[in-house]
Image 1 (spheres, one colour):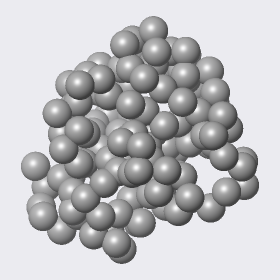
Image 2 (cartoon, one colour):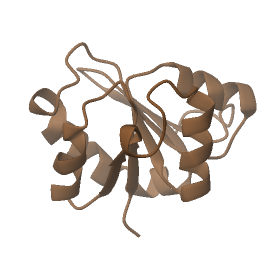
Image 3 (tube, one colour):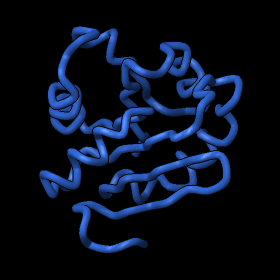
Length: 127
């Protein structure tokens, strides 16, 4: 199954083409909803349409924790430079490597040096 990626408003729409060229289905939230829509709306759309959320926003991890949700998966970047020029190779490699976890339900947090994978619902422990 191809990983479907919903790119949050806090990331550039240029990520869509980068991810599509790497073989993923990708949509930017600006194509689907209001730019000022609450995170819960984007979260619900991703869950209903079987997309993972690609974001720079810490709120999605908090939402997963608060709701004990099993989906959608969230791929969260925690770096200063979130441009495709800076992050595309690493992002693509990690999305490919962790596709099974993302399809099953996971929160993946990535910074400059490492990545952490937590299986959903949160509270089930680090894997």
